[in-house]
Image 1 (cartoon, rainbow, N blue to C red):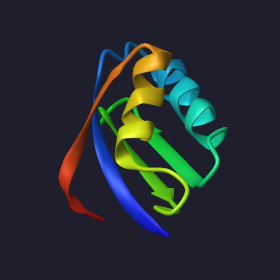
Image 2 (cartoon, rainbow, N blue to C red):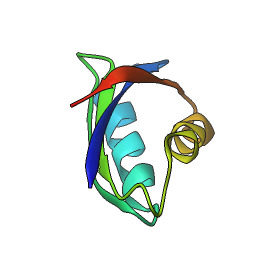
Image 3 (tube, rainbow, N blue to C red):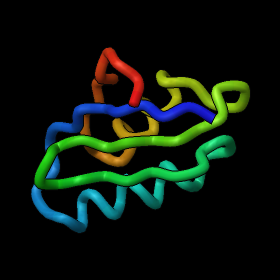
Image 4 (cartoon, one colour):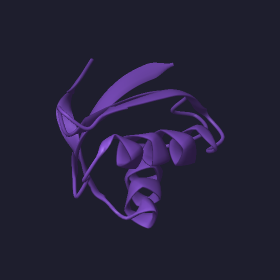
Length: 74
């Protein structure tokens, strides 16, 4: 498992963050997603053999937000 942070834009409230977490946690390979509206970011713990950064970013985009991976792993 690895952890990765993504910068999120487009959130308007804490419910937005909860929506992102729920959609990410539905993906196979995602162990945990923790999104912060205040910090405008999400931290995802995932199995890189089952899901990749692009799939995570695409899922966040489908939820209605823009996600950009932060260059350093956590």
